[in-house]
Length: 182
Image (cartoon, rainbow, N blue to C red):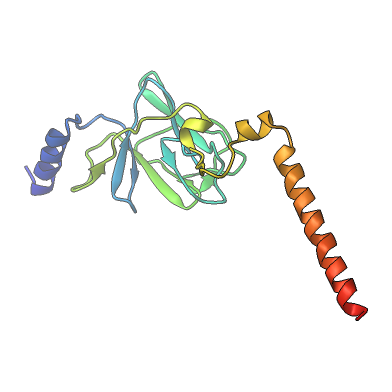
């Protein structure tokens, strides 16, 4: 057995991931393999709820997804911007074959069921949060009312600020006018 295969097998055994046959998306730049699971779609996009979040302007919030259909995995574009598959724009669903390469923004992914390269890190699935409030916590400050408090009190706080600014402006005009006539 070649040394590289032995090291890959050792990495697989340590991670508890079966080889070969386990489907992965490999991102070579990160030197990371993302295992595909069959119980739900694997999502890619700019949204933080995606399995792989790509922080690029050219990437849709929900750009693409990979779903299991029987023994196959199918890549579907789900966003408004283009996904490139094997050098051409992906127009519809495509059953992924060994070695298919696709791009989401500038990130390049390769589909494989073969043994992973030596020292390839296997990404662990992250807990996906369900709502926008779960994904993007809002910072609050002691002196700043929350949105709920602002709605509950109506626009009283805004009214008082407007009144104070108007009084200050009138006082400044009166002071300037009094000083100009002396």
